[in-house]
Amino acid sequence: MRLAVIGGVAAGLSAAARARRCDPSLDITVFEKGPAVAWGACGLPYYLEGRVRSVEDLVVYTPEYFRRERNIAVRTGCAVVAISHSRRQVELAGGERAPYDRLVVATGARLDRSIDGAGHPGIFTLSTLEDARRLRCFLLEKKPRRAVVVGAGYLGLELAEALRTHGLAVTIFEAASDVLGRRDAALTDFLRKHLERFRIELRLGARVEVVEPGSVAGVPCDLVVLAAGWRPNAELAAEAGIQLGRTGAIRVSEHLETNLAGVFAAGDCAETTHLVTGRSVYLPLGTTANKTGRIAGANAAGRRERFPGVAGTCIVRVCGIGVATTGLSEAQARKEGLDAVEARVEALDKPRYFHGEPVTVTLVADRGARCLIGGTVIGPEGVAGRINVLATAITSHLRVEDLEQLDLAYAPPFAQVWDPILIAAQQLAKSM
Image 1 (cartoon, rainbow, N blue to C red):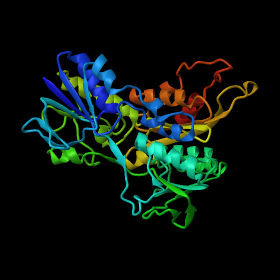
Image 2: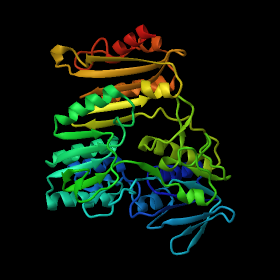
Image 3: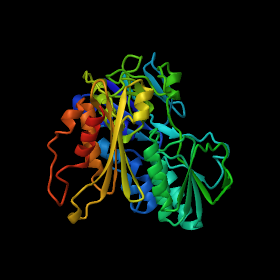
């Protein structure tokens, strides 16, 4: 049986590798339009910053590795331009047709470049290795002094910090009234003040419709980086008769199968299910891409595995502190019709005599079910561990009274006897 995979980054290669493990007899071919596969897109801001020495360091595996070690044919520089499912074949740029019996679509996502002037020199995005090379070269050679970043999502915030590391004054424009798409006024206010301490201006409710070298919305700048409006690369699928969901991404079942039998979709081009609401959502994250790729690959190889969905857990470093979210904010929960209640505390992560630092924990629960449905953690250390506890609690439908009784580790060099999570859970229980 022949398995074709369109896309050779996180989801596509996870699908191909898992399919190979499930069925050693499969004939697997991966088509990737770019020059590289299996590279870490999330490391691009840190290459720009200088923390990662070379973009080649972000490449985890080469096509030769997959051919030699996994018996998977990986064809780079091969753009699939059409899918003919009735003939069970994909058409490549140049006219070549490649047959398949099963197909995994993992075409990823792209940043919105529809803003007028996005093609001018001095206007950048950060989606590919070549994007990163071009932007870093510009920084080192042209030595700009002022930058504008369009978008206050996790990429926009990471970019702002990277540009400040190069000494630029940075202004972030965000069309929404909040950061990270979270609808959390307290989080937004905290980040605005934190960014200001690092000479990063945050302008909210400021939609950018035109960009040009030299000025954006009256703000002088030497370069502009677009980091807003992720869009699923779903046009190829739609043209082949694959249904899209309400988000504009590919609609899939819990088995990652599309409406076309034998065609699966995974990663940033596909919808997934939110564990709290049960609704289809579009959350393009590397963690989701790898997990859905594995399930799609297994099922394309004949398994019947299901993907339960995601809580939307995300973490970002912003000028020396970690900011992590999972589930829903109180405002998001109320918009979904849930009777949400929130508690927010600030507490030291370690005893004061061990130089404890303040950590802010926000918990959101559904008053009716008494279950945790969201959380935010902000602090200089221990943020990933705490948000992972909250993500686990949401996935497990943990009740608030059980959360406040969790047996979390304590020793002065590492944690308080009452972890900030437990203190927040106690406050949340009092509010319900």
